[in-house]
Length: 292
Image (cartoon, rainbow, N blue to C red; front, top):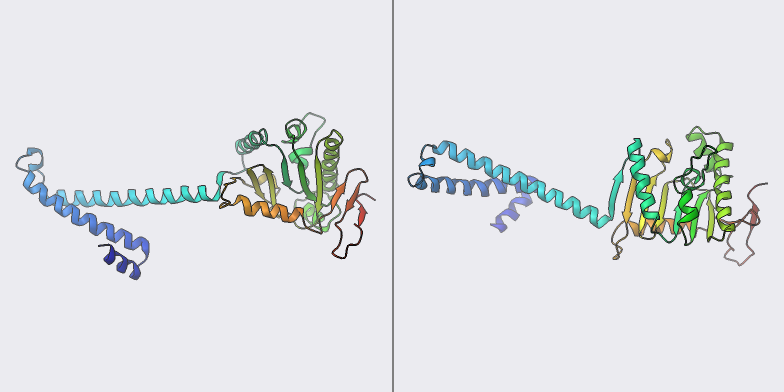
C-alpha cells in the first residue's frame, strides 16, 4: 500500500494525496464495518432498525472526521517542533497597554537572574536611562543600578551620525531632542561606571535595524521599522539551545559583528572621546571629541 501511495503522491500535491489516500483507506474500512454490522443486527436489536444507507454515510463521516483530526494534530505538532527548534518561546504585540505590561514583566523576570547584559539600540533612553522629575523611569534603569552585576555592553546610535538625523525625522522628533536622549543615556552609563560597574559603550552610524537585549541565554528582539517608534513593534523572546541549532546564535552573531566592527568606535567616558580601532597598518588609534 505504501508503494502505491508514493506513486500517487508523485502525480498530485501531497495534501490532496494524503486526503484521498485516507478517504479511500477509511472508506474501505467503513464498508467493511458496515457489512459487519449487517451480521451484528440480529444479536444487537439496537442496530436492527438502522438501514445500511444510514450506516455507510455515518462511517464515511467518521472517516473524514478522523482525517481532519489527524491533519490538525500533525500540523500542530509540526508548529510546536518549529518553535522549539527555533528557540522562539514568546511573542506579543506592543499595541495595547496589557501587551506592554506583559513584555516588561518578561524582561524584568529575565534580567533578575542575568549576570551581565549586552544590548544594541537606538537612543537607549526609554530602555534604561529615562528618569523624569515626576518619578517615571525607564523600564530597566533600576535593574541596571541594582541587579546587573556583570559586564554591561551597550551599542547606541552615534548622535552625530547622519542616520541619527534620518531616524529622528522619520519619527517626527526634533533632532536636538533625539540627540539629547542619546547623551542622557551616555551620562547614565557614565554614572554606573563611576560607581564601579563594568560598562563598555560603542556607537554606530548605520541605520538601526534590530533592538536586541541579550541576557545570558535569553534574547529580546524587536525590529526598528523606519516609520514607527520601536515601542510599537512586536517583541520576540528567544532562548538559546546548547546545540546551537536555533535563532539565538545567528542573531547574537549580528550583535558581535556590530560590536567588533572597525567603524564603530569605543566611547572613552573619562575623555568624552570616540576611540577608533587601530588600522591594519598599525597606526595609532584615532580619537574624536563626541561633543565639540
